[in-house]
Image (cartoon, rainbow, N blue to C red; front, side, top):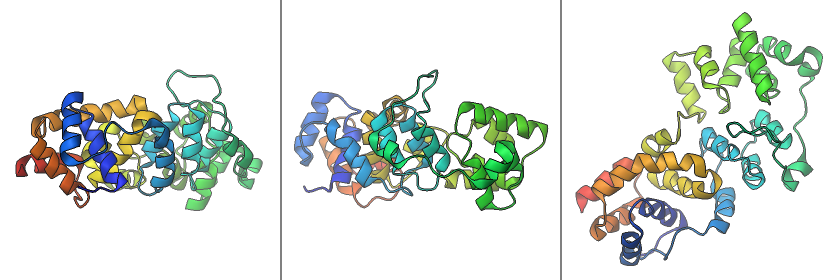
Length: 280
């Protein structure tokens, strides 16, 4: 059976959730290349295979949380409209919990440098620029200067003192690094929540693994997580492992069906797993 690389990596990710001996036998049965994804190729695969719209913004944040220069450089190339995160990368901001030491900056990032500073920020400062935002473009420009944890604290204090304008709140809330408690205070209306979700802000890896599709794309991205966001990918593995073991297990026939469906199935990963097991 022939596969494109995306399908092969997607099936391989699920196979890693069963016993190694069973996985090796299934690989032979369905014609997959022996062994797991090669780690050295994963960053390149992410760089050329992730389209900005195809990868939720939160996934990029999970890579940043590892505080690895190579991962940061890959994320840099997928942030054309999120200047705040680009500033953070070029300034060496650590994103990992409890980390304070600056992250070394990759030569590509260092060469390109920080995005231009908005003129309104030069005149009014951070809070002043946010309060002056009367358009979405102005809101995004002001929000792009929220870079370090201290900036988020300043925003939180300013909003508590007097609510920020709607455009500023919106531009801040769709940032994947916006503190969850601040985003919750910005709004809880279903329409607001929907827009945040459209921007690719997720509750966590479990949501991405179980609720997003198509399965092939999601699973292929998760397969890169072993190298680029290993801390977070474990949560996705834990969300899918019971389904894989209950519906596919070590059954060669079920895995063969799953491999056949992978390229054309447009539902979520759990739907694909259950469907393959049922058909087999």
